[in-house]
Image (cartoon, rainbow, N blue to C red; front, side, top):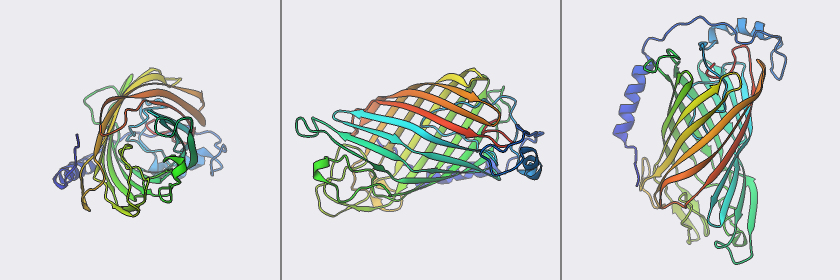
Amino acid sequence: MCFPLGKHSLCVLTGALLILIFSPSMARAVTPANPGSGDFFLPFSDDAEMAKDFQALAPPFLPWGPNTSGPFFTGTAEVDPIGSWYIEPVFAYDFLSAGSSSLYNPMRLSIGLGHNLELDTFIPLIQNWESPPLTPAGITASHFGAGNTHFEIKWQLTSDGNVYLPLSRPAIGLTFDFWIPSGQYQNLNPQDYGADQLGNGTYNEAVMLLVRKHVKPFMIYLQVGDIVENPATVGVGYTFNNGLTSNSQPSFHMVDGNLLYYAGAFEHVINTEWGAGYLIEVYGESQSGQNLFFGAANAPPFSFLWWAPEVEMTWPHTPKFSVTWGAGVAMPVYEANYPTTVTPMGTATLYFNGPFGYRGM
């Protein structure tokens, strides 16, 4: 099953977003979340001084917005406040299917820019293994390296209107994403049986819509987006995005179809101080047989939907520094032209908080 997002759908989405952007916003008093000395891993000598200098860029302060690990696949609509940043050095997926597995660490860095903007960069480190029955009996091939580099600019359009009322306005944001094909995808070694392929060779662009609603003690997340993958020339042994089909031509001009990304999560924060709770998340992708800008696709379409139970906690947690931890496992609901996959997951994120706290505070 494939669900392409056409031009008319994009026009409707754009019109709705313009209404949200120019709707009246709720003004709220803002106080620095952390007016301390602030010389811990921050390029400013004093948080109180910084809060004064950047008061016009201070985000709205929510009466309930705990710092939690959050979902694995669904982004959050809020941006990091100016002066705050985080790094995610451990974010391990271990994709397990018949004879194949992959450990994926995005190495994410997120920086609050002010003006409701945030910059995220991902430089993934990947370890692949290929084993029987995909390889000759008794042989296991492995390969380690960097994958495709991902840049993201997030623009927060609205803040949560009321964290206690379920029907009040949620936080809404947009991301503008760009991928560079820095992962190896050409000149593959036949003796590695595909383990040395670390990227898909395409420059990609995407626009994503994100929504998050606080309803104490719960949070609800939604994300949907359209990814356009540019054509690329691939060689023998290249595995297409569906993870099942390989190319047999020495120089193949590949056109991937539009990729629809959709995810959502329900989060129950049991203990606010420790950011402890659990989540139920769903995540899927559908690649169609048509590319929005480049016509008919010749790469195989696919579709899948996973669901994932997850747990989370935050420790240590101080006004200046905190670490969030999360773990879960993603399991298939349905998969069409896609390998049957079970995905154990784990994450640790290091937050360095400026005078206005962390995202969504």
